[in-house]
Image 1: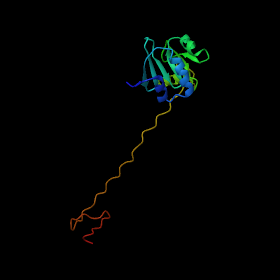
Image 2: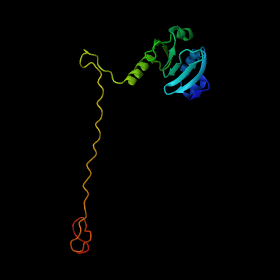
Image 3: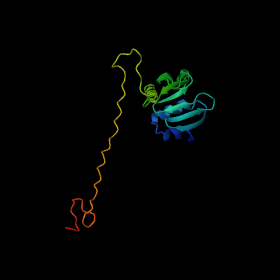
Length: 167
């Protein structure tokens, strides 16, 4: 598993904007951190106190135990919400690109696949998936032309049917 040496290294590697770096340092420096792991979606902050891991993603961080844990560190101005992806945990938006609740909902929808309409739902209001492209049809292979054999000299004739040896 890939590990980061420090929070600064992780934020530089993920190309976090300066405003978000300052915010995340303030947010994460007050909690006991065991290690920082590199993941596909961002950075996983493993706590040494046994609390849930914090997932730092583009635009938001998720995994806080309570709303008060967020407010105590960054104040009540930061947008925060209860996570749908990780029930029982809270998330907070970063200053730049902070549309975390929307991003999380889109990621969940992408993981779960197309939404099926509920029974009794009005027709035309459900989202319809795009039809899949039809497979490409390969053109039929042309029939191979066979060179005729000259009946007089038994040599192969040209495809035009004229023997170059006898004519």
